[in-house]
Image (cartoon, rainbow, N blue to C red; front, side, top):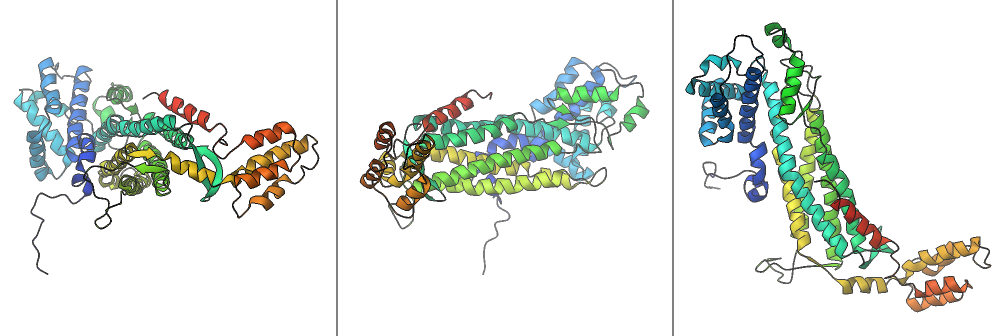
Length: 473
């Protein structure tokens, strides 16, 4: 087969850079290769300024305010020109961090401060810069992008849970009719579950280190023995908005990243459970999908409105989790004091988060296009009066314990009446009337229906919503 080659065209191999670019694009500012290099420049420049301002190296002159501003402009005005400059240097050095060092030194020369050029990357190994750059990038991506998307999903669920708190529905355990609940309470369960994971992720510690080639400050103490290097390192890492890790090898051990990725994967999996439940509620007509004007559900069946948002979310959450699981397993291991398996692995962090963000966006959009079908819910409840067997046998148990005669073996009596076949209202109420229950109990059960047998479901829904709305964002 003869075909045209597409390799020379400006196309995307992965869907996050192609079909789904609009959803994933905000992460480019934090976890792309260009963002990583911008963060490297940021860390290198701030370490340079930190050393100069603290007069760490004897004999170095005072750094002028204008020089600081021009160095920091490398970060604030970072763009294509700097990206190209870095690429030019890396083509020669075949080392990305060394290219950053040379770019900063060239800038120092341009502003007439090349007498300080050897203060750039002073006593640093590449991983001193890389771990801090990733720490800054991941923290920004989680704080500015992922957490707001997660909060938007929980907000949407909370709104629906509150609105539907009192709407009764037939529950299904093992796929079979079970004790009724309310739709709001069932959505409130997801609000509660996702809130707990959200809070864990919100409270993540983003660790960093800057302690040299094997984590010993060896070059530091030989070069400037009188400096308090651990204190200087701690103050610098904390100035970057990270938590100081005082005990490492050449690399920061990445345990915090594994912890974070496990928490996000757990959030993803709960969201995946939400997607499959909503898909199922749609399939049994508890929710109707609001058609999008002009959209096509099937190329051959004009009537269809497919739950594509939930199906898309399912798949992308699975992809995200597989990547997050792999990252978490890989990053906690480094042979002896250093190997480079983390270097290529970490370049996929943005991909893992991108699939999660895409899925969360789709879940919100899918939920926004749903309308509760109260008639379908009511009809399902009305067709399943046998679910009141639980209530009847429980009342009989209490009566038996109170000494009412004829209340023995209540579970077995209800099992004989209801198991494996439908019981309608008349049959169930006739059974209750023949039990000989005290009048108050009989009246209570006579007034009960599947639609009213929802216990504290509405209160539980509202409490879950209130807890989320009280959560610090």
